[in-house]
Length: 137
Image (tube, rainbow, N blue to C red; front, side, top):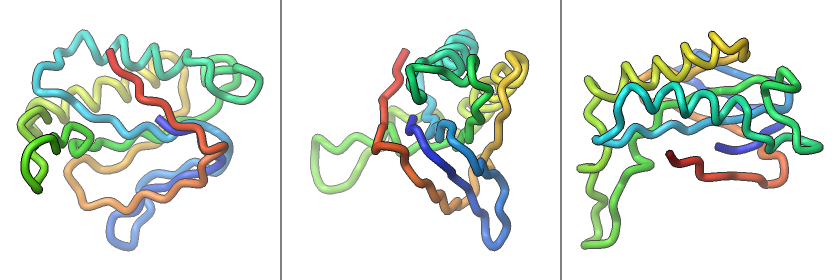
């Protein structure tokens, strides 16, 4: 998760998600062992994490989030010269969990933009800081 002043996701020539004000860019990876209950906990954590200016959160400021699925976060590089993706959840397992994180954020009142699951996406961000945090459950 990165604190940004703006961010966008493009698929082909189409901008599919964008925030044009300070908020959070969430690169969301789903682990092969993740279960549905983690989606609710992750949404709460992202929404309430006090990482914005003056130790505020999206919950207290109404700042937007751009959530982009990112299976490559679980790439394993300890052995050899090619990453292994065995820890990343398969699309049929990951897609519903990414969707549930987004839905739960919206239920909490968050303003959420998204990428497009499974698409080749170009992600652009202007980091505020830089300030990037690994959020694990």
